[in-house]
Image (tube, rainbow, N blue to C red; front, top):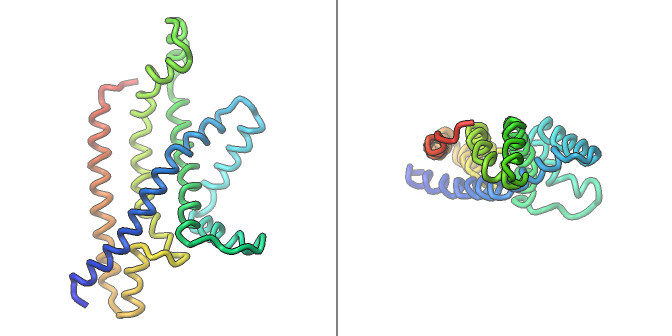
Length: 215
């Protein structure tokens, strides 16, 4: 096969990779914040339940979670398996929501209690203190760890091939199986490097733009 044909085939797989990445990010960022509120809740049973959930998700491999979401319902309840893409997205969203929630929680808890108290002394409500004083400091602090997790997400999308979702690595592996060509497998790394490079530049720009938000 020609270089152009291989490139076009890999681009079709990369499109699926970008779909998994985009949907996961879109859903897990807000869901992670909801989980954060649960893990910081003053109601102890809910707090312990949420933190146990996060501990289980963070303590088990994402590949295992994908396999469980896809095969688990059929094995446990004898129901039809979820569509492969749906199973992948559910596993990814749950996994990354748990990781993002801990980043959110760390950022919120890193702000000194004195800032809340000072705002309240000035007559501000807790909500006003959070959104006008604390929020941008939290964002500034969580940008570096969030960028690391998001770049990791790009590479983790390759795990979708474990249940035969035709993302980039799956397409590259097909060249080995059907054409006995191994170079497309290594060529696929160029797509990951290019995308991660773009994200690195974007997050670097965001960090510089937020340099004036000092704690």
